[in-house]
Structure formats: C-alpha cells, structure tokens
Length: 486
Image 1 (cartoon, rainbow, N blue to C red):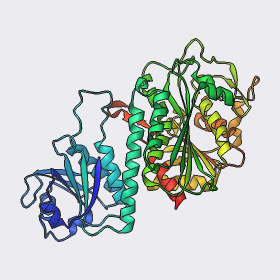
Image 2 (cartoon, rainbow, N blue to C red):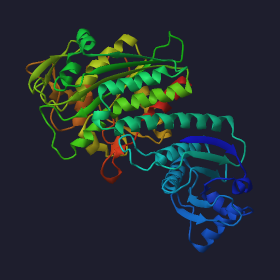
Image 3 (tube, rainbow, N blue to C red):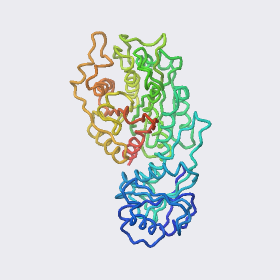
Image 4 (spheres, helix red, strand yellow):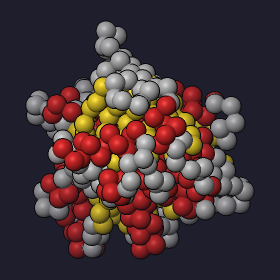
C-alpha cells in the first residue's frame, strides 16, 4: 500500500481525480458551514437522517453532484480522536477495497492531531491487507494507493507522524505476512532468510547472524535444542543488530519466540484448532516487523533482535515429559510438559542477551492460554521487573492503540516451579499459568538488567471467520523504541 500526504482544501478535494473519495466527517465538521460540495453532501445526509458523524458510520454515494470522484463515501469520525479515526478509516477502507477502486483519497475537513493521522494510516493499511502467498487464484485487492488530504500544509509534527506510521505499517504487514504463512512455508530456515533480507537492504544499518544446530550446541543452549529434537526441520538462532547510535550506547534487546509450529510435542495438543499453532512464531514475526520499521526510520538507538526458531513435534528423538535438560545459564530444567516449550527456547535466548550488556530486554511470546483467559484479545499481558520500563511500554501501547496491561510477578508465584530432580520445573500447574510462566523466564534474565515480558497469546492473531495474524505488538514496540531514541 502506497501512502501520500497532500494539502487540499475541501473544494480542491472535491475536484481531485480519484477512483474513490472518503470524507471523514467529525462532529465539528457536521456543525460547520457547508460552503463546498463535500460539506453540503454531508449536511444533506445528516439532515435527512441517512448519516451521522458517529465513529464508524458509513454512507456510500455515487456520482455525487460537484464531486469529481465517482465513488464518495461519507465516514463518521466522531470526535476526531485517534480511536474514532481508526474506526472510521477501518470501516471505509474495508468497504472500498472490495470494489474496483485502485486509488483513494482520505479527506480531512479539519487538520487532525498527529495521533489521529497515525491512526488513519495504520487503519487503512490494516484494512487493505489481504493474505495471498499460498492462494495463487485469489483475486488481489484492487486498492493500492491512498492520498491523505489535509486542509492546510502539514506541520513538522504531522510529517513525522506520517513517516512513523507508514514505516510501522510496513513492519506490521511483514509480521502479519509471516504469521499467516503455513508452517511449511515459514520454516526456521525461511524465517532466517527473511531476517537476512531485511539486513541486506541498502543503508539498513542492520547486521544479521544465523546460527544452526552445531553452533547452538557448542554454545550450550540445551533447553532450546531440546525443543527441536522431534522435528526434521533444523533449528535456527537469528541475531539481528541495528546500529543507529554510537557503539558505546547499550542496546535494547528484543527477544521473539519463534516456534514455527507447535504440536505440543509428546504432550500433544487436541486436534481442534491445532492449525492455529502456526501462529506460535508471532513473537519472532513482531521482532522482524520492528526491524523493518527501524530500517526505514533510522532512529538514533541501538537494538538487538534475538529469535530462537524451531518446530515442536513428537518425533522419535523428541524430549519426553520428565527429561532434564541443561540451559545456557547452567540451570537444569525438568520438562514436565513438552507443550510448555516457548519458555524453554526463550530462557536460552534471554541468557544469550547478556553478552550485549543491554539497557533493557523485552521478550515477546505467544506464551500461555492462561493469558487469554485473563485478558482476552484486547490487551497483551505485561510483566516487568522495572517500573520505568513497564510505564514506558504501557505508554507506548496506549499511543500506538496496541495496549498491554501490567500483571504481577510476586516471588510466591515461583513456588510451584520447584523440582525434586532439577533446579526448576518448566510448569507449575494451571493456577496463574501466565504468571508462573513469566516467573520461569525471570530466572534467566541477566542480573540487574531491566526486563519485560509481553504475553501476546490473546493479541497476536484472531480465530474464526477473521482468522489471521494481527501484527501486534509491532506498533507498541516501534512506539517504545522511537520514544527511547528521542
């Protein structure tokens, strides 16, 4: 999707050549004097009761008098806030993309806030996305370009918001694309190739290193290697480094769970819904998405991305319940449930992060069904050892409309992880399952390093008719990194 920011008064927008024009009608627009064709059209529709400025309300019109575009869509944008603008644009683009329009104009009657402009871009990109990688006969979305028409010249703040939004949209799209691909089209090796492709882009300031089974074994990543034993697909440990600031500045480390398919291993999952376990690498996909945005925006910050990628299958060599493995940190782990594999690959990646002496570590993982029970599909779960880091991530999530919610990390929750046969067990029973998973990971965080864990099991994808990856929490991560760079 191509985006362009233009200056157009309403009279100019009415004369603009486009396949479709979306007029974003806020409550203030509805009250203003109707001295142009677009405002007059909206005023008539409101007066007759066919339309209102309520966020998400739509009224399609065709060949409207005094308007050049053949298709005109009145879209209610409520109070003009970021939330309202997202609802308006998402509804409008979802309707337009099913038709023949290739180029559309999003017309603002009043200059939006930077947050509302950002929300409009991200909503348009999200609504226009369609997965086609393994659907060669699918009809592609006709809509390829959107012009955002502002009534006055864009300020520096609006131009910055626009640039950040378009880069974030690219990152979200990349994350969605890899999340949606079937496991046989998104293997650990293919995920590594995607990371290398980002690094190879000219001027990316990104380096990529990929480690295979021999290198992982030599490092002593016994927990990570144990998860991959049941699969014929070789594991890959992906290390991305973005250098946007002086080498002396410590990086932020992003660690993404990359289980490209999770059958549960020997502790196999029920058949119903198991296809959705291709989404178990959405944490890894979000790290790739964040690096794609970094490549485009080039902020003054250093970032490391670590992705332990493998499959979790019940092969003849698979790890068995009761097995004890040795992690990179030297701690031994009793694997009571092989379906709690995400924490096993992450614990070695968290320990590996210590070599970069990071200023903060953030891991992102579709870790527990318990987090879905706790928070549903609206907010990601946030666990943090540092109040400043937690607050920064919460603020970034709210600003990006990609929210998270703080969860507890009391030491008492770790009691259930005690083992008679190893330093720690990998599960602690059903109660507070998402918390005990976080407590397990906390053991492997480098001492003294601020750490946060984002459990995205409820936010990374949707089920049912709308089944597919959401690209979350790329928006939150990019917003946080940009704030840290600033």
